[in-house]
Amino acid sequence: MRVCLECSEKLIGREDKKFCNDACRNAYNNKINKDSSNLMRNTNNQLRKNYRILSKYNKENKTKISKQILQQKGFDFQLMTSLYKTKNGNEYFFIYNQGYMFLEEDICLLVKRE
View 1 (tube, helix red, strand yellow):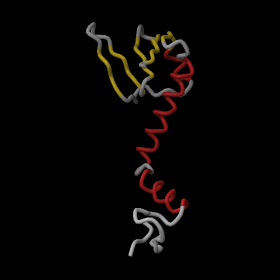
View 2 (cartoon, rainbow, N blue to C red; view 1 turned 180 degrees about the vertical axis):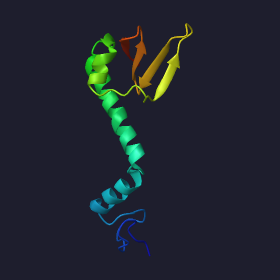
View 3 (tube, rainbow, N blue to C red; view 1 turned 90 degrees about the horizontal axis):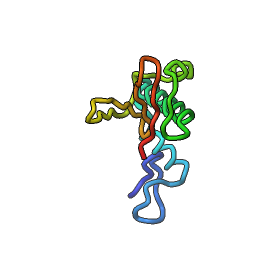
View 4 (cartoon, rainbow, N blue to C red; view 1 turned 60 degrees about the vertical axis):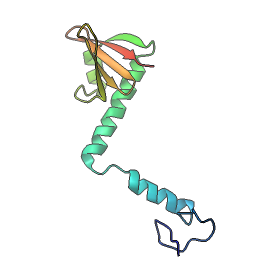
């Protein structure tokens, strides 16, 4: 006998059916996909915030901006998703496809990877 993965009720219908209704399917998937700890949730939230900040100020896909402006908006320079080093030794820090590089002490070059 087949049962719903969420509520364990008997399933009627198709042989490959896993849930008795959409509510059970959503509840099951939300449990599976939720962040397992506060650290993960907070880190993911800050990465999303960093991405939104870079996207807001990088309309031209290449923009110079003060590091202080980014910090005032809540940008966390400790978090990134990848690092790209050029042949010249320059380092670009990326949050998904939005990135930045330090040009001077207080100036950042914002870039976007397609």
